[in-house]
Length: 409
Figure 1 (cartoon, rainbow, N blue to C red):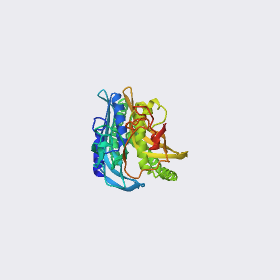
Figure 2 (figure 1 turned 90 degrees about the vertical axis):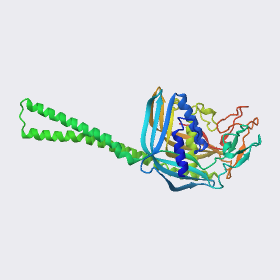
Figure 3 (figure 1 turned 30 degrees about the vertical axis):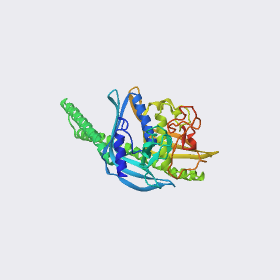
Figure 4 (figure 1 turned 120 degrees about the vertical axis):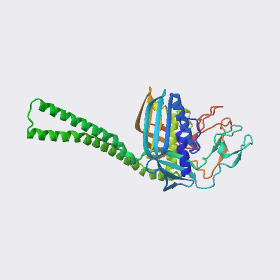
């Protein structure tokens, strides 16, 4: 896991600022990064991530928890890094962030079977042999498209949590400011006192005592204010972290409800799909053309979003059944960066998302790779990225195979 974690962080450094291909993450993540890159470039922006070793545990470690269902298992790799984000417009930096973070990375793998990416598969259309891993984007000879399961292991999700080991360093500039403010205030008070004495006033014992008390207060006040503001900010961050942790109590509820409908869905597996699909829909210029989105037009403000940080928390609010369609309502906790007219701003955002899927279709418990054919005209096209057949216009019902987003608010 250490190897795939290092490879993933290395690839993410160049994911949006270059055309480097991502090999360590699953296809859902690759798709939303592709859409995000287009959004950034269409707006005339330059966005770059940078992960370097830093923090309290830069080597990282595999966490003991293992989540699994009948087919997949997921493990978390936790390690710290020094993180930097830079957003530019016309060569000018309009937003930047730098801090030490803990980076939890979810790595998914299949329980049964050895890796088969290097196995040979003969294209049923042109009969050319190719490695299965080379067919994920279609046959390299005739461009026939395939429906296939993910070639695990892959990174399916990641988020960033503040590494509080550097909190004291954040306090240093504020303390320096407090010292300078105290010195300036003390000097000002001394000057006032000297001027007062020079004007012929007598320094009584009471006046001297009052001066000393005022000097102490003036010098100490900046420290009190700075430390108080810092502690309030620290407390707010702690409260936000606790709120995120509370959402994990809903994950068991989600898994138990899905079992009622004969669906073994690990919450981490579903969460990865939900977050990736959400980001793809938001970054896509025409979300209505995506095969896994059936909702209406998105609010105009979402067109300004250029980056979405998943904060590691999904709160499953409700699971219910209508006919053979299961619906899931969930809140996704994020931090977004938006740009409009050359000005960027960051804020926290909770997306309210509803997903649906046909539960009459059983889960496939073995790896499969098959040629995709349009039910209308028999043509082959990439049904993971297109809702309608480009040849005859027939609609592909993804909800029969996978989860679909019904609405985003």
